[in-house]
Image (tube, rainbow, N blue to C red):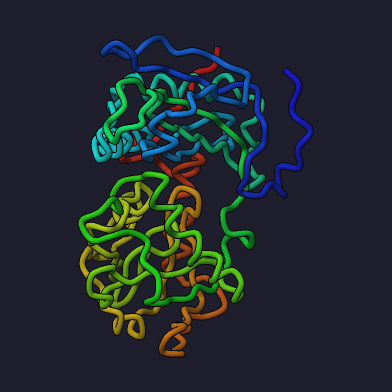
Length: 341
């Protein structure tokens, strides 16, 4: 098995063609067999409900090659459960957890040669996608669905890796509506964030930090990631119906407790930004990224947290990555080791 000609240590967080993807179709009231494809394209009816009415959801999870050579998939059961919630949130057919996990294992095994080596800082990113494929002109749920899983090797989401990034904040943009789709992982949430994200990039910031869409008083999502702050030996993260429940954040809360921190999941008032010793963003793509500066575009106010990663953010990052790469004991049973034939 020939290794691909890739500079593993310089990979961006982007798409690299791999050998195979896997697919499964829901038709006539049941899920079919898993199919393997080497095509990067999906044949779709021009009236497919995913194209016209946004019946589409996705996930993101990773597989890591450890120092011991073993490949670990991190918390795919939680991704499968969230995949179900997203499907239910927009009236799609949810994929059973067992079938989801079988597809994940299969796409990882089929693309074994694209799993980055230990020490490169890269990982194999797995992207499950569900789409409604029935032709629909009237607004109604599809009768048929397709789940596709692709895998691609990726580097860090933030180009500078584990270094403090700068973010901005504005009340001019909402990522989602109150009582809307913020807590499920659908493409429309991300489309709605593109304008704000571009404004942030044009001004020299990595992402836009949102306030809650109803009252504009509390911290919400940080770009496409969850926000967290640390003060008084406490890990604090928003509890909001418009925030996507991040599996990385869920894991970091447990790691924080393991390290002796208290954990609070609650509304975080804007004014509390000046009280934190450290702040950061977390998610599957971002992992755990320190934030060194937040600039309020409206009030022209700056919150600074240092030019180096904070002590606790570093400890959290190292412990979580240690579990993912098999360097730390997996005491909570989060990783599944892939058995290759």
